[in-house]
Length: 247
Image: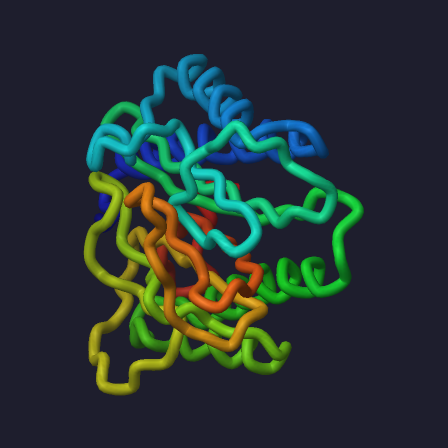
Protein backbone atom coordinates (compact mmCIF):
# COMPACT_ATOMS: atom_id res chain seq x y z
CA UNK A 1 0.00 0.00 0.00
CA UNK A 2 1.10 3.52 -0.79
CA UNK A 3 -0.67 6.34 1.02
CA UNK A 4 -1.67 9.00 -1.50
CA UNK A 5 -4.71 10.66 0.12
CA UNK A 6 -5.62 12.17 3.47
CA UNK A 7 -8.41 9.60 3.87
CA UNK A 8 -5.88 6.76 3.55
CA UNK A 9 -3.58 8.42 6.05
CA UNK A 10 -6.44 8.80 8.54
CA UNK A 11 -7.55 5.21 7.99
CA UNK A 12 -4.08 3.81 8.63
CA UNK A 13 -3.63 6.08 11.65
CA UNK A 14 -6.88 4.84 13.16
CA UNK A 15 -5.92 1.19 12.66
CA UNK A 16 -2.53 1.96 14.15
CA UNK A 17 -4.07 3.51 17.23
CA UNK A 18 -6.11 0.34 17.85
CA UNK A 19 -2.85 -1.60 17.68
CA UNK A 20 -1.15 0.78 20.13
CA UNK A 21 -4.01 0.64 22.64
CA UNK A 22 -4.13 -3.15 22.45
CA UNK A 23 -0.41 -3.49 23.05
CA UNK A 24 -0.56 -1.12 26.04
CA UNK A 25 -3.46 -3.11 27.52
CA UNK A 26 -1.68 -6.44 27.11
CA UNK A 27 1.66 -5.19 28.43
CA UNK A 28 -0.04 -3.83 31.54
CA UNK A 29 -1.69 -7.22 32.15
CA UNK A 30 1.45 -9.36 31.95
CA UNK A 31 2.48 -10.85 35.27
CA UNK A 32 3.09 -14.33 36.71
CA UNK A 33 -0.08 -16.43 36.66
CA UNK A 34 -1.78 -14.71 33.71
CA UNK A 35 -2.39 -17.01 30.75
CA UNK A 36 -1.86 -16.17 27.07
CA UNK A 37 -5.52 -17.08 26.55
CA UNK A 38 -6.52 -14.35 29.00
CA UNK A 39 -4.36 -11.87 27.10
CA UNK A 40 -6.08 -12.89 23.87
CA UNK A 41 -9.47 -12.28 25.49
CA UNK A 42 -8.35 -8.82 26.61
CA UNK A 43 -7.30 -8.01 23.06
CA UNK A 44 -10.73 -9.09 21.86
CA UNK A 45 -12.33 -6.60 24.23
CA UNK A 46 -10.24 -3.74 22.81
CA UNK A 47 -11.05 -4.81 19.26
CA UNK A 48 -14.79 -4.90 19.92
CA UNK A 49 -14.67 -1.46 21.52
CA UNK A 50 -13.28 -0.06 18.27
CA UNK A 51 -15.27 -2.18 15.83
CA UNK A 52 -12.06 -3.98 14.84
CA UNK A 53 -11.54 -7.60 13.85
CA UNK A 54 -8.53 -9.92 13.92
CA UNK A 55 -6.92 -9.71 10.48
CA UNK A 56 -5.16 -13.10 10.87
CA UNK A 57 -8.55 -14.67 11.68
CA UNK A 58 -10.22 -12.99 8.69
CA UNK A 59 -7.42 -13.76 6.23
CA UNK A 60 -5.99 -17.09 7.33
CA UNK A 61 -8.55 -18.51 9.75
CA UNK A 62 -6.25 -18.12 12.75
CA UNK A 63 -8.11 -19.09 15.94
CA UNK A 64 -6.95 -15.95 17.78
CA UNK A 65 -7.43 -12.26 18.30
CA UNK A 66 -3.67 -11.81 18.71
CA UNK A 67 -0.65 -14.08 18.69
CA UNK A 68 1.21 -14.67 21.98
CA UNK A 69 4.61 -16.37 21.68
CA UNK A 70 6.60 -17.44 24.75
CA UNK A 71 10.33 -18.07 25.22
CA UNK A 72 11.67 -20.03 22.20
CA UNK A 73 8.45 -19.43 20.26
CA UNK A 74 9.15 -16.54 17.90
CA UNK A 75 5.87 -15.57 16.27
CA UNK A 76 2.30 -16.77 15.54
CA UNK A 77 2.04 -18.48 18.91
CA UNK A 78 -1.47 -19.66 19.72
CA UNK A 79 -2.60 -18.39 23.15
CA UNK A 80 -2.65 -21.29 25.61
CA UNK A 81 -3.94 -21.85 29.13
CA UNK A 82 -0.42 -22.30 30.55
CA UNK A 83 0.13 -19.54 33.13
CA UNK A 84 3.06 -17.24 32.51
CA UNK A 85 5.91 -17.65 34.97
CA UNK A 86 8.58 -15.27 36.24
CA UNK A 87 11.34 -14.95 33.67
CA UNK A 88 9.21 -15.87 30.64
CA UNK A 89 9.87 -13.87 27.47
CA UNK A 90 6.53 -12.98 25.87
CA UNK A 91 6.02 -11.60 22.35
CA UNK A 92 2.69 -9.95 21.54
CA UNK A 93 1.75 -9.59 17.86
CA UNK A 94 -1.32 -7.42 17.16
CA UNK A 95 -2.88 -7.05 13.68
CA UNK A 96 -6.45 -5.67 13.55
CA UNK A 97 -8.63 -4.88 10.55
CA UNK A 98 -10.33 -1.52 11.10
CA UNK A 99 -12.72 -0.06 8.50
CA UNK A 100 -10.80 -1.46 5.54
CA UNK A 101 -7.27 -0.88 6.87
CA UNK A 102 -4.79 -3.20 8.59
CA UNK A 103 -1.91 -2.20 10.87
CA UNK A 104 0.59 -4.55 12.46
CA UNK A 105 2.93 -4.24 15.45
CA UNK A 106 4.62 -6.41 18.03
CA UNK A 107 6.52 -6.03 21.25
CA UNK A 108 8.39 -8.44 23.52
CA UNK A 109 8.33 -8.16 27.29
CA UNK A 110 9.84 -10.25 30.05
CA UNK A 111 7.79 -11.39 33.04
CA UNK A 112 9.71 -10.02 36.04
CA UNK A 113 12.13 -10.86 37.40
CA UNK A 114 13.86 -11.41 34.06
CA UNK A 115 17.29 -12.85 33.36
CA UNK A 116 20.05 -10.50 32.16
CA UNK A 117 20.25 -12.30 28.81
CA UNK A 118 16.50 -11.91 28.26
CA UNK A 119 16.72 -8.18 28.96
CA UNK A 120 19.71 -7.81 26.61
CA UNK A 121 17.85 -9.74 23.90
CA UNK A 122 14.81 -7.47 24.13
CA UNK A 123 17.00 -4.37 24.17
CA UNK A 124 18.88 -5.66 21.12
CA UNK A 125 15.69 -6.30 19.15
CA UNK A 126 14.34 -2.81 19.83
CA UNK A 127 17.71 -1.29 18.91
CA UNK A 128 17.71 -3.31 15.68
CA UNK A 129 14.28 -1.90 14.83
CA UNK A 130 15.58 1.64 15.41
CA UNK A 131 18.57 0.92 13.17
CA UNK A 132 16.24 -0.31 10.44
CA UNK A 133 14.08 2.80 10.83
CA UNK A 134 17.08 5.07 10.48
CA UNK A 135 17.95 3.37 7.18
CA UNK A 136 14.41 3.49 5.75
CA UNK A 137 14.19 6.52 3.47
CA UNK A 138 12.47 7.14 0.15
CA UNK A 139 14.92 6.43 -2.66
CA UNK A 140 17.03 4.02 -0.59
CA UNK A 141 17.14 0.28 -1.33
CA UNK A 142 14.87 -2.04 0.65
CA UNK A 143 17.97 -4.01 1.63
CA UNK A 144 19.32 -1.01 3.56
CA UNK A 145 16.80 -1.86 6.30
CA UNK A 146 17.99 -5.45 6.64
CA UNK A 147 21.64 -4.43 6.45
CA UNK A 148 21.18 -2.04 9.37
CA UNK A 149 19.17 -4.55 11.41
CA UNK A 150 21.64 -7.39 10.92
CA UNK A 151 24.65 -5.20 11.74
CA UNK A 152 23.08 -4.07 15.03
CA UNK A 153 22.13 -7.61 16.04
CA UNK A 154 25.57 -8.99 15.23
CA UNK A 155 27.25 -6.14 17.11
CA UNK A 156 25.32 -7.17 20.23
CA UNK A 157 26.12 -10.88 19.88
CA UNK A 158 22.69 -12.23 18.93
CA UNK A 159 21.23 -13.89 15.81
CA UNK A 160 18.79 -12.63 13.18
CA UNK A 161 16.17 -15.27 12.29
CA UNK A 162 16.47 -15.20 8.50
CA UNK A 163 13.37 -17.25 7.65
CA UNK A 164 11.06 -14.43 8.81
CA UNK A 165 10.65 -11.07 7.06
CA UNK A 166 8.94 -7.74 7.36
CA UNK A 167 6.42 -6.86 4.66
CA UNK A 168 4.09 -4.36 3.11
CA UNK A 169 0.78 -3.92 4.92
CA UNK A 170 -2.34 -1.76 4.72
CA UNK A 171 -5.16 -3.28 2.69
CA UNK A 172 -3.98 -6.84 3.38
CA UNK A 173 -1.77 -8.34 6.06
CA UNK A 174 1.07 -9.33 3.77
CA UNK A 175 1.74 -7.13 0.77
CA UNK A 176 4.78 -6.28 -1.32
CA UNK A 177 7.54 -5.55 -0.67
CA UNK A 178 9.07 -8.32 1.39
CA UNK A 179 11.49 -6.70 3.87
CA UNK A 180 14.29 -9.08 4.96
CA UNK A 181 16.00 -8.52 8.29
CA UNK A 182 19.43 -9.15 6.75
CA UNK A 183 21.52 -7.78 3.88
CA UNK A 184 20.66 -9.00 0.38
CA UNK A 185 22.90 -6.94 -1.93
CA UNK A 186 21.36 -8.27 -5.15
CA UNK A 187 17.94 -6.92 -4.18
CA UNK A 188 17.50 -3.81 -6.34
CA UNK A 189 14.08 -2.69 -5.07
CA UNK A 190 13.79 0.88 -3.80
CA UNK A 191 11.63 2.42 -1.09
CA UNK A 192 9.28 5.17 -2.23
CA UNK A 193 7.43 7.96 -0.50
CA UNK A 194 4.11 6.96 1.08
CA UNK A 195 4.91 3.22 1.04
CA UNK A 196 3.53 1.42 4.12
CA UNK A 197 5.62 -1.44 5.52
CA UNK A 198 5.99 -3.43 8.71
CA UNK A 199 9.59 -3.38 9.93
CA UNK A 200 9.99 -6.32 12.31
CA UNK A 201 13.31 -7.77 13.42
CA UNK A 202 13.07 -11.19 15.03
CA UNK A 203 16.14 -12.13 17.02
CA UNK A 204 17.38 -15.15 18.99
CA UNK A 205 19.91 -15.94 21.69
CA UNK A 206 20.70 -19.17 19.80
CA UNK A 207 23.06 -19.63 16.88
CA UNK A 208 20.64 -21.06 14.30
CA UNK A 209 19.10 -18.60 11.84
CA UNK A 210 16.31 -21.03 10.93
CA UNK A 211 12.86 -21.66 12.40
CA UNK A 212 10.51 -24.61 12.78
CA UNK A 213 6.73 -24.91 12.77
CA UNK A 214 5.15 -26.64 15.77
CA UNK A 215 2.46 -29.31 15.53
CA UNK A 216 -0.32 -26.76 15.99
CA UNK A 217 0.49 -25.59 12.46
CA UNK A 218 0.88 -21.95 13.53
CA UNK A 219 3.61 -21.41 16.11
CA UNK A 220 7.09 -20.75 14.73
CA UNK A 221 9.95 -21.55 17.12
CA UNK A 222 13.73 -21.48 17.15
CA UNK A 223 15.36 -24.72 16.05
CA UNK A 224 17.94 -24.76 18.87
CA UNK A 225 15.82 -23.66 21.84
CA UNK A 226 17.20 -20.11 21.89
CA UNK A 227 15.02 -17.42 23.40
CA UNK A 228 13.37 -15.20 20.79
CA UNK A 229 12.23 -11.58 20.69
CA UNK A 230 10.13 -9.69 18.14
CA UNK A 231 9.70 -5.94 17.75
CA UNK A 232 7.57 -4.39 15.01
CA UNK A 233 5.81 -1.25 13.88
CA UNK A 234 3.89 -0.28 10.79
CA UNK A 235 5.54 2.76 9.24
CA UNK A 236 5.05 5.09 6.28
CA UNK A 237 8.16 5.87 4.24
CA UNK A 238 9.09 9.52 3.71
CA UNK A 239 12.24 11.34 2.58
CA UNK A 240 13.12 11.74 6.26
CA UNK A 241 12.49 9.46 9.22
CA UNK A 242 9.52 7.12 8.59
CA UNK A 243 6.20 7.95 10.25
CA UNK A 244 5.26 5.46 12.98
CA UNK A 245 1.61 4.52 12.47
CA UNK A 246 1.29 2.11 15.39
CA UNK A 247 2.84 4.10 18.23
